[in-house]
Amino acid sequence: QRCLQDPVSAYRFTGTVCRLTHPAAVVLNEKTTKVIEAAFQHAKYPSVKGEKSLLFVGRVTYGLENLEIHNLSIGRSAFELRAGEGIAMEISNVSAIFRGTIQYGYGSWLVNLGHSIDFEVDSQIDLGINPKLYCGKGKVAADTSDCYLNFHKLHLHLQGDKEPNWLKKLFTDFITFTVKLVVKGQICKEINKVANILADFIQDTAEDFLSDGDISVDIGITTAPVITANYIESYHKGLTKYNKTTAVISDSAFHPSHLTENRMLYFWLSDQVLNPLVTAAHQDGRFQLNITGAEITVSTQTVTFLHLETVLLSVTFSENGNFRSDASLDEVQSEFIREAVEKIGVPKVLSVLEVEITRVLDKQGTNLFDIENPEVLPRDGFVVIQMDFGFPHHLLVQFLKRTLQ
Ligand SMILES: CCCCCCCC/C=C\CCCCCCCC(=O)O[C@H]1CC[C@@]2(C)C(=CC[C@H]3[C@@H]4CC[C@H]([C@H](C)CCCC(C)C)[C@@]4(C)CC[C@@H]32)C1
Image 1 (cartoon, rainbow, N blue to C red):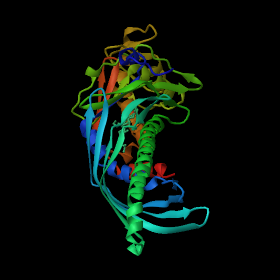
Image 2: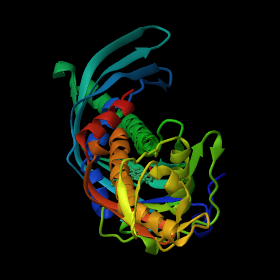
Image 3: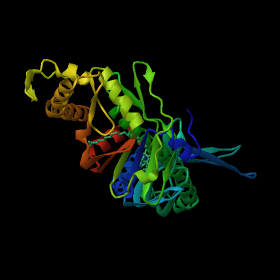
């Protein structure tokens, strides 16, 4: 299913929503300088060659090779969420030294001369990027083509400055113009690559988190993310896949008012995501539980439990949380089952479910995230999971390793 243009109509097919508020973006932004550093260092600077014909005199050839970046340091990064537009980012006080080799020569019908010297350019740059988020191949993608570099300082040093001044004068403009052009082109291209690797990394991590064994969840997006001054919000299918069957969602009805803005990270999950997920887990034998040996007294009868599972399978819970039996049972049996379920079954199942959910969360690596005060809020037709978090350093290392592959 392709991305729907209109978010409101897309909400019907949206099983899960992720809202990242401004405080969360502040935490992520603290790592931006590391991401930008990776982009500068990972950029490849192509060689540049040119020649200029001089009438009746001959032609001058020149080229820039082996351009490398050294002594990179990134100042500070500031950002702003621009409603309905995107993210405005300013990375200031980027200082770096570019080193390379300049080839120059003179040729005519009479003589050909050539020489090369090493140069160093000491630079101070301010970087501006305005990422826009869009729907790219079913995932959130970033367009950072609105990218510019302001060079505050660009001092050229030729090899030991042993060369004559005329050479420096002749080539200073060429070298500084070419370094500006090559560096801007390569850095902005690298940043776009890194931004999309980051977006993919986050979505792949979320998809991996929701997959275990034969059960997986398709969190492809249903429409482009929405950006307000306070948050970034993405809309995902949330379709459970199990045994070659994929769940269907047609009217899950998300509304932005379902979420607040005082926590860092929100996940909105429709019951139409949770029900197929729990059903698949049950069919996959994840929730088998035998309770034997327990005794209860109903009226004057004491019955020993042999298999509560048998009793539970014949009991379903009604909408308001009370239970009703499937089969028509007489009064004593019905009371017996009520006691059995409420006094033994539910506490026992909850204690086991708590352990099982914690095991799954740990197995999926949740414990590796610095999650603070997570809350699970069941609502009518959906569940909200909200939390604060610290950005774990190991996650940045994992991401940068993927960037530098
Ligand atoms: C019991 C308590 C424990 C609970 C533990 C969690 C339980 C969760 C349960 C269910 C979860 C189910 C829902 C999962 C759906 C998640 C889908 C999901 O993965 O949603 C993500 C979609 C992409 C994105 C919008 C996002 C987050 C960050 C965004 C990125 C931030 C910066 C990125 C810029 C492009 C970087 C620019 C800087 C660069 C140097 C130029 C940006 C904006 C790209 C997009 C992502 C959320």
